[in-house]
Image (cartoon, rainbow, N blue to C red; front, top):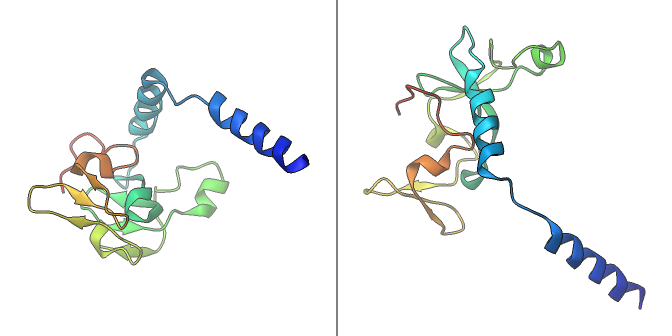
Length: 128
């Protein structure tokens, strides 16, 4: 009986959850893109392609987030920390395949357009 009550409570919690609305998402994106760094690096994550939170620089190179700088109130990517790879595809955890038409296939077989692979969207002027 207790299991049933707990399960019903869990399902009710899931049913009452609401997705982030477009305005909140645009505000978050504007805040993130508005953070300029001297290094030219920004926070990037791509959960659909198995890439955790990292610093990606304008030239496409990927570095670890500088936790010491973040703990001191800094950006975390200005400067970034240890070098990881020269591209997302070179990241040791990368799990997507880019198709000829520009779409991306995840390890689960999901097909995404290239822009949706960015967690927060690429910064203005970013070219891969």
